[in-house]
Image 1 (tube, rainbow, N blue to C red):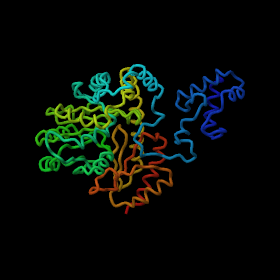
Image 2 (cartoon, rainbow, N blue to C red):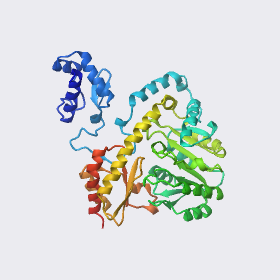
Image 3 (cartoon, one colour):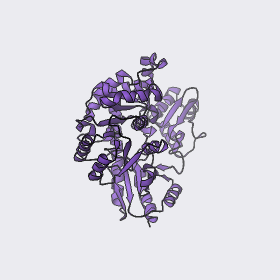
Image 4 (tube, rainbow, N blue to C red):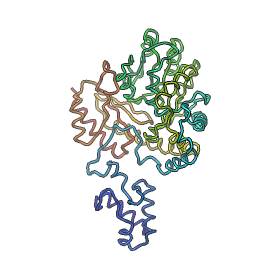
Length: 445
């Protein structure tokens, strides 16, 4: 074994056994140099390799620190097993590449950083995106694309602004993304619900709501629905679009997990729309980092001017630095390489989740686990002592998301449990899912 490899093994073992003098900080280069009787260059080579493997990170004029410990994930003797987080794990993100793109963005767009930019977004990013999204079977003019400061901003504006159909109610799936629920409730926006379970939605009920419900738009997550993990079939998507055209209802398609779909024939609803009723929304935060705050929106022409008017007085313009970095990241092929890695990583975890559930069947616990995406979902047949479930899981260091937040008040339900795989690996899944199931089974009445 080479000297620098010995140093790497020493550091890794020290982290695992918690034998470092300063738990968050690595020994100085001089200390390791004296310990191993080697040059400073050899120590730097070892530390650089550890940094490339995302085990440590450097702070100028301070030293080297442990990533896992800093983020409070695996440093604890009893780590939290987090089945709730949707955001990308820091260890899964090639931050060095994106840091390069941020630096390049500053160089390219430094003058624009000191002025207000076009509320539509950075034109060069829009040009790149209009070509990039064609791989998702999305073909549109650049003029119909708007860059926003997150998908949440889009939902907020669309919920507030008037629509050409003159209608006022918003229809949402039950359950659905909790951020949408919260905004509608906080702003007293009129909203109706339609049940969506592991079998999808009742299209006859949807038609009645479209016909008599004064529906401005229907907010839907067709692919890897949050929180059930289900996806609409091609026939269901086409039927929903047909009903929208018939009853003059717009559809807001939140395609948050498009990048994680391994089925390249699973086209978005937008690709079937011939009546300009589908508003397409795609976020980049969940597959990159939440702090990026960049989403792409495709609007029918009738809605563009009104949306831009509302957006202009929401944030004037979306941050140029993030947009420029994303443009470079996509244009240089880094995004596609990152997604190839992430799709494989998540697919392995989802497969592990499905296999573990198959091996630990409970008669009153149903589940839906897709082939890829962020998460699967459990459904409890029967009433459940929900508070006791959460309390016992906390004692066992297992964290899950409170899926009751995904329901309107009149639809409240504690029977669903979303299981997200972005913060857990296969080993943690295999070990902790049986524990979770036993706790659930214990408190079913």
